[in-house]
Amino acid sequence: MPKVIALSGGVGGSKLVEGFARTCRPGELLVIANTGDDFTHLGLHISPDIDTVIYTCTGRSNPQTGWGQDGETWSFMDMLHILGGPDWFKLGDRDLAMHVWRTHRLSQGASLTAVTQELAERCGLTFPLLPMSDDPVRTVVETTEGLLPMQRYFVERRCAPVVTGLLYEGAETARPNPTLMANLQDPELEAIVICPSNPFLSIDPILALPGLRQALRNAPAPVVAVTPIIGGRAIKGPTAKMMAELGLPVDAAAVARHYAGLIDLFVLDEQDAYLTGEVAAAGIKPFPAETMMHDTADRIALAKAVLNAAAAAHQTL
Image (cartoon, rainbow, N blue to C red; front, side):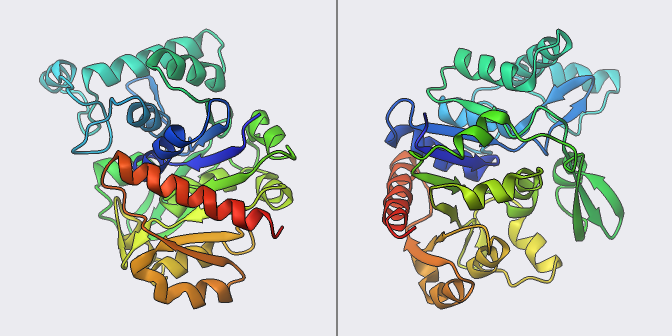
């Protein structure tokens, strides 16, 4: 049974997941990926966050973008452009194989959980990776220009529209992954980690699943969130922009307050240590650490720091 459960989105979350994978012993780590980003494109079921975790933790990710595979070729996209097809969502040839095979297996009746496990194992992932649910949940961004499906907002419009709110369509009837729910009750569980992913686009879709928040509150292990904001800026993606547009202070304390009532511990960057009082005022124990992950060594160091903080918090639960 796993001792650490990590809830992850894409690029930022996958970096910390790699740190955990290199720190935990075999069988100790379970990763749950956001599927609110999933969508159908050109008839293919695409799971961006699942694939980013796989690519990052198997040495396949593009180091320049953080998404997609390194050393990609683009023959498919070149021909699609010639044919007049939609080329706003870039599908590299290697990446395309993942989507084609996933779609094929789903069409055969396999669950998203089963397909994800197959893809992860064949790519060499060393820990179980599961979708948050086998039921469809789709993140929709409310903007001043109207409702935009997540990938239309994020990729096609490059996060330009002003955000006014978010919807997680299907979440109210979706069933959380049963393996996740079972493991949250394990008395041997030592830490539940909310990775440094966008709270609104990557983590809230997971938390919107029925019964999951209560299951996290009832879990025997501390719930630890790691900041995606350092020095008032997002390391990757539109988190800071979205916070400002939603009327929130753009700092780590605002992220901690977003998770108030759910988490026991909040890891913020050392340069934001001046915010520990605000975090504590929200009923959350602050833990300053070096959270910037430039390379694998940084990912391992942060993973160890998070697990050490969780171990200390566990003694007080």
